[in-house]
Length: 438
Image (tube, rainbow, N blue to C red; front, side, top):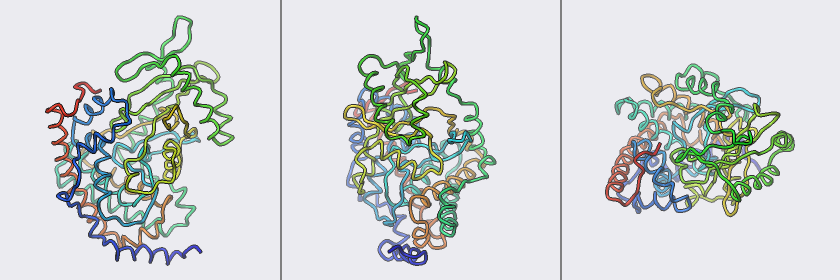
């Protein structure tokens, strides 16, 4: 029988007897039983090896860039530490540049977490810890001093705890559809929304497409970041869309059927995702001025999978269903498929997407974005977990916010040490990094 709301709050509070709140600040770096560089390299074994120098070249640019590409290292640390045992659907790679804007099914622009390669059910604080560390590292990169970064991290953790408390008192269905309304007043978010307003599929058409000798649209070869896929591989990618179509809801299947696939490309994306197979398919709707781009992105097991139970064997489906669990509004054509032995997530590419510009985090931008990040993460956890139990564990939130802030400060220091070891590995030749990684 389902527990009452009060019983769920008490259950959360009782977790403190097994795992104290203060223990969540502990890192114990001397008890690490692994070499971070070995963990990083092991995490890339299933990737396209020729692309790894690009990934490592991008990670070399700063501690924050390294942090974004080294989720496997933080997962290994979190997996060995005490945790609350209160599970939600984790984003898995919560960091400031994994926030962005995109078009909802009704055409409105929304701002939310937008990449879910690492999503899995796990302890709520793992997402909070990762986002808090990212705030410190991103803040330092854009010129904030350490006390300012520390304050911004606490703004975030306080916002999360306060929002979870608020969501725990709301009707459950209201939490499921809750929208944050002050986003346009936050400069980094306003800039991302403006970027989204300007982004259109026709812009991608101009950037990546050319006419061939027969007047047909074809992807350009723009190596090393993008190139056209030809022959049997292109046919295999297009053929995989039949399985994807079956996974769509009937009304979305009809919408997809109005488009026809024209060409296939390969795109080198992001920092953490470099090395994963990432295809782009060009579709045409009513005419040449009605293009659509689908991204078919390889998904491998979450970096957290070895530390947590995972019931979903198809990694593309894991990512798609995790995204739907966390976001209040998701991509209209989100789905999954299989190509050969690899699992893939399928989604629209650049449907009015915009990201966070680190330069917009100068001044008050960092703290303002940290405030909204706390609400967004809490909403995702409230939708996919039990806000009542998390609130019971956190209590008033004041102590919990400081505990999580303290962890973030120590882990930011550890990340800088790991980054130093990473740069040394490049200099020694242990790791090959491209000098011009784009």
